[in-house]
Length: 311
Image 1 (cartoon, rainbow, N blue to C red):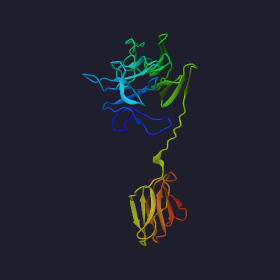
Image 2: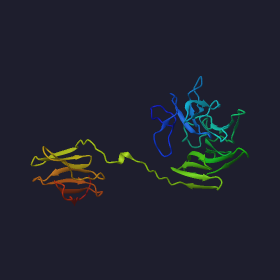
Image 3: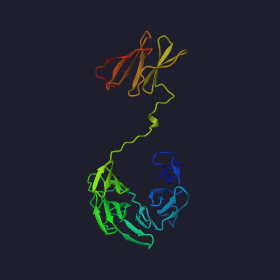
Image 4: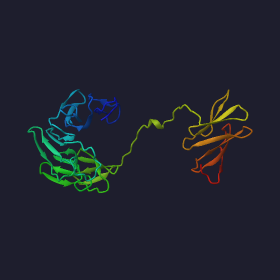
């Protein structure tokens, strides 16, 4: 789900990265819910209905495009189709306050199972809890429920009609879930966890993000000095800009960066009476010190400890 062009629409992007491709174009918000077994994108949209627009499920071919097809369920906010594409497990209404722990009001709804061939609907076992985000793995529906007073993962076997609790987290709620490739992945406490139903094991994943982070690259900036002082000779001026100390010529010559470090702030530079040295303050050592340097920047500055080195 993205807003690259202003509206909320469905997009697809290669797993190796690249430009997202927009696949829906409608003024109503289109919110991606996942994939169907035959490669269609499943999404929720309130683009149709009356007298009041209701959330409904739609599918669209990301390659062919065209108009989406509506899944024949009158109302569904969140859901997932099984591998046959004939059974939809879904939430009926939007849980607009999901952080309300142990809520037992009208937002709390059971997971519903709709047979799209027979158009018969059944409800999963429910005791007034908030049940959310159903996903399929084979003939089993995994979903989130707070029936033990913390949001955890549960599994419902549609063949045996047996319900089992999969996780038992108590401090932090499980926030999201998905399934595929024989495993279930869920987010809890800021971490992703991988559950293997066959092995009966759950492991916390270690994620390494390798972004290009373009905002950390060196770049050119227009510098507006926050402090400036003319040298005693009038040949150069010292300026403080973006936490660095520079000298600039009044007429001939180049600018000089005397500090060349973005990891600390250097400020309030001052000339020596003969114009040969420049002093400034810096917390580069984590405590403020006085630095004195050759105004030509040819030697390392010397530092002087200050008594009571506050700002």
